[in-house]
Length: 428
Image 1: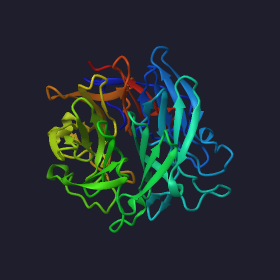
Image 2: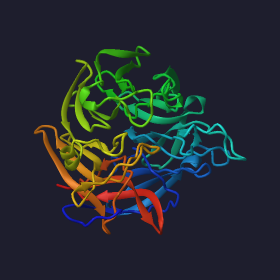
Image 3: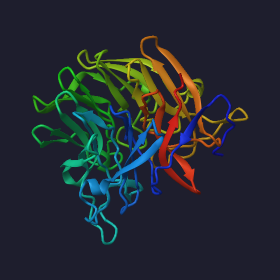
């Protein structure tokens, strides 16, 4: 049931970058100032690292750049590999900045956990690293390492002041790396024991997206119970916003001590410099909202799930929500790659029991755009490959120089499912 007739739909082109073990990637794709698309293909193997690649829209070719273990100087370490990057890229002073994360997990109490019993002959995961890539020389540098052997699941950068900020996984340390001083500050745990906690007690799903107010360099992030926090690097402390939170009826009701969703966290959020507000989307409900950090106000704008989802009134089958949420280069239009229910003979395909990772069933992939000045919502329809197969497990987006959309999705290659680059033509 993975195909559908190509009627009123968008077509995605598949690219095979040469990495047979390529697994699901979250966030890690960008269009840089040189016009190239940079992306990371993840691995879920303990002994195979993720890989960074580049796509050139002019030549329509992909290029292998580096193995994440080699970038980190760990190709001979015999430790659990740097399997993925879970964060966006940030461009600053001719470099791309990003971070690594663990891709191999140990199942403990039916949950994906940071390995505590490494495979025979291998060491424990050494911790995620913040890295830089020189766009001209193609050289990589390792800058710093997350505390306590944790991965780095969330990252943002103040590209005006040269500061990087991250959240580690699974415990949830908030870290601040000062690029100019080459110093790392650990501000401690931000949300109980994070995803290392016990469900029903001290478990908290961790925020996957943060933003920087470029006027003052203050960073904002959310927590599972709906609180919003600000970190001012000048003051050196994290403070709770007293007059704004995400515990909104329209977002739904959640037990924030249990896994299976992002709870009251925002899923993805972006700072809009000219509007001087942040635009975010709540994962499970799919509501777009506007957050003014200085007024501490949150305003719901619209539900930007697919048109079939809006009509059904139901949540999508991916309970964490989608990370493919981006802003056009002119700052006028939001792009969102989201799910849409599949109907057969007028009946919506049934949801399954909640699976590990929050997937409750197969959905179509839809492209939604939202024009901020006119509030014009467009669902451009479901997306299929040329043969009618569906792109799945899509949690990234970048808009290329010609308005084409690039993301990382699952598809079949020589009888095996991989996650690799796909291109969707400019819908306008």
